[in-house]
Image 1 (cartoon, rainbow, N blue to C red):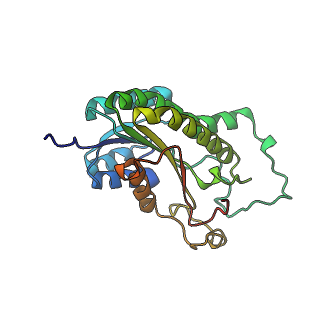
Image 2: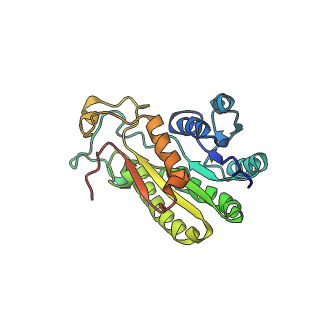
Image 3: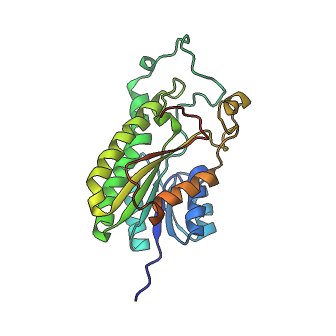
Length: 250
């Protein structure tokens, strides 16, 4: 009986933070990898795990197409995808600010360019990746995708207007994708972190988390790896919170 082929995965925004942690965790679990990021540092991460490296931007459709085509040629198949984008460009909240219903800032204050930029960064990257990898996975008869989102996909926050909006839109897309492609053996889920330790959070922000600490990228990588593995074979279309209990909604 032939042995199962070594699993393969592609990871975007993989030069640092959650993306790089996912690369290292998947490599530890025996995946062959192709990784992409804008930074030159993607080559350093690739060198650690003997991965194929590609410098490109997740908001550039041509870059994504070239990356996926090169990864498929290099790896021979694509079993798993981590669709990561790195930090939101909102920049709100990282300075310790909190939602205040009396403040004058409003979602109507942002121009079209702001919203369209975030649409590309936080929504269209998944749409474009899915469009590219789905035919590959369908031909294989199996595949899994994990999108890295944020806990504000569950509870909108005035300090993160674009993320609160675009990540919620992503949840709708994931549900529709999962409904259609479960029959093809392809699963798609979303992982939504809370306060990640690669940001210098204020103590007051951490005190609002029941666990009183941020989440480490390595912890998130292990959840992502679980969602890509056969251990989660009956999970699809879900948004999994890893927020230390911050969100109160049920």
